[in-house]
Each structure stands twice: as C-alpha cells, then as structure tokens.
Length: 200
Image: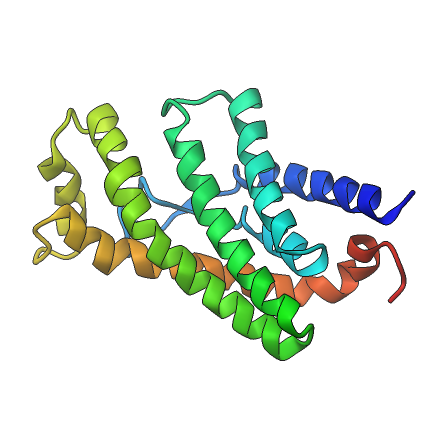
C-alpha cells in the first residue's frame, strides 16, 4: 500500500472514530446551559492533522459530519453539521499548520493551544450568524430572550446573545479544544505506529 493510500485509510478510520465520539457528549449545566454539550469528537481530526498533515484534519472533520448526516440524519437542515465542521476544521488545521513548521513537542503544544483559541474565536461568528438563529427558531419559538434566559439562570447580568457567546461559549469551546489536545498528547505516541504506518 503506497503512502497516500495508507493516509486515506487512516483518515477514514479516524473519521469513523470521530463519528462515534460525537455520541459521547455531556452537559455541564453549572457552567453553560445544558443544550451546549461537551464532547471530544475533534480529537481524531487533531491526531490526523499532526500525523498526516493539516488538510487531513479538515478532511476528517468533514467526513465525521457527513457520516453523522447520512447515518443519523439531521434535525437542523445540515446547519448544525456545517457549524461542527467549521469549528473542527479551524481547530485541527490551525494546530496542524503550526506543527508542520517544525515537528517537535514544543510546536505541537503551541499548535494545539493556538488551534483551541482559533476554534473559540471562530465559534463566535459561526454561532451568532448560523447556529443560534436556527436553534432559536427550532427550540425557542423564535424568542432570543428565551435562549438568553437560560444563560441568565447561571449569570443574571448577561442581557444579550452576543454577550452570552462571549462570556460562555468562547471559553467553553477553547476548553473543549484544550481537552482534546491533552488527550492527544497522552495517546499520540502509542498510536504513532498506526498513524504513520511504521514503527518510528
């Protein structure tokens, strides 16, 4: 099997794992409303970006959401899948492109940290213009106030959707990226022979 074919096979495997991880999500209602879930489904894309290259990180994020849309269907008109893809791609590509500059532990750490922050920052326009308008129409009867009220139950001083996203969602998304990064650093070396197709 040539190198490119092997990379595609590994990317497909990582995409399948990412799809499964999408179902392992938890709510943390003490820090953010329960409809926002914590999961580690971006971990395989980060593994792919580090081992195969940043483009593969984007590919894995894409395939994960395509699998989810095909197998589970969509309740958001594919907007939820699009947003998940955009955030995951921003995370893995940013981390991977930095790691490509010089492949060592330091740049991997830097890449993962930058990728987490980039994902958090990208979540603001993605959520504000795409995800939340749809969810507010679907689940809150078109009432932005009803959505904001869930955040106010945690922090009464917030009074707008933008403020909610800035105070709650951006830090939450960054922490999600850092969690995926921490797990990546724990499991990357044991998985390296599979990811690289060698015993290096």
